[in-house]
Structure formats: C-alpha cells, structure tokens
Image (tube, rainbow, N blue to C red; front, side, top):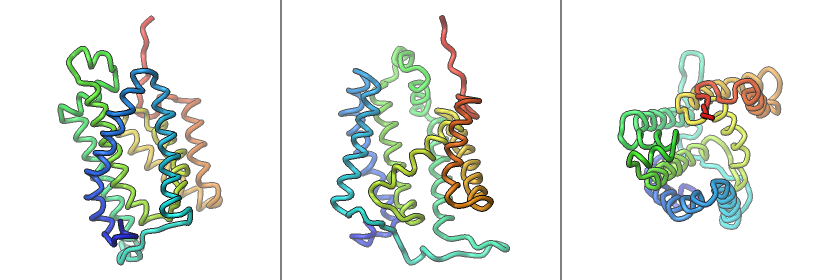
Length: 239
C-alpha cells in the first residue's frame, strides 16, 4: 500500500485488520475446518501450499528483488541517556506490546477467550459443554491472520524483504513457541525476549553470521531437556 498508493504504514495497519480478518475467516471456515475433520495433517500441507502460492504471486507482482518501506520518519531517532533509539523500532515495540496485551485480555477475561482455551485444551469436551468449536476455530484463525497483517508493515519498515523472506522467520518463530510452551502467551513473550537478547549477544561476541544459529540451539536444547517449554504443561494421558 505504501509503495504503490503512498498510504502511511501506520494507517495501512488499520485498513489491513478487517481485510486479513475476513480472509482468515474465509480460509478457516471454507477449507481448514473441512480438512481438519478428515485428517489434521492435511491442514499443515494446505497451509504450506498456501505459503508457496502466495510466494509465487508476490514474485509475479512485485518481482523477487529486495523491497523496503522507507517513510519520512524511518531514519529518525531520539536520545535516551547515552542511547539513540530509532523511532521505527520504538513504534514496533509499542504496537507489539499493545497487541500482546490485547490478546492476553481477550484470552483471559472474555467468554470468547475461555471458549478458545477450552477448545485448545480438549476439543471434544468443549463441544460437549456447548462450545461451537467450528466457529471458535474460525475466529481464532482470523484473529491470527489479522495480527500477521498488522505486523507486516512494521517488519517492512525494520527489514528489507522479498517473496521468500517468510522462510527465514519460521525457525525463529518455532523456537519461540517451543521455548515458551505451546499455547502459553506469557511464555511466548518471555521466550521472544530471551532469544532476542541471546541473538544480539551472539552477534556482538562471536559474529553476525552466528546469530541465527542461537534459535536452533535453544530449539533442540529445549526439545531434549524440557519438551513442554518454560511455561507449558505436561499433557497427561489416562491408560
């Protein structure tokens, strides 16, 4: 939107929320829910296929060259004691914290949040107590896609990107989810902070090329030592 229409990234985030929410709901309700009823592994293959299709469409429309979002405030910064803080990074941190707080409030204090958590913990039991699992999963997926749509412009202002950039983030995101604990929003926040600090320390003490490896070190280490993650709960099964 910024590159072709000149719309400010902050304004585009507001415009993208309903668009991505609707697309997410359409995909989940029309495709994912039906596949999940047959075989849950089919949903993984479907989303993987969608990623490849979207990557191809982006390459066809915008080419495979590196792109970036440069606004009038992209290079602005302010001094905080002895540090110079880029305005864009502060904005990204603020939006991220706002989204995280909003998701936490949704999952903790609302009826929809309780239904989402119940569905995650035990889908069958949630259905037995009257939860419309199909609707809940649709809304959950749509919210996730909407959040991704909001964070896209922020990433575009912070980093250069090209159609296949998303593959570079998968390892980092997987490490954050595993370290924090599957289904734990608090764990995801703590894990993201820890791994972010570890990445920066590694890039300074060793070399910049070694920094991405730290995510995989934590990923495999946690899977061996504590598979449920920092804030995850061990699943108990009755015999």
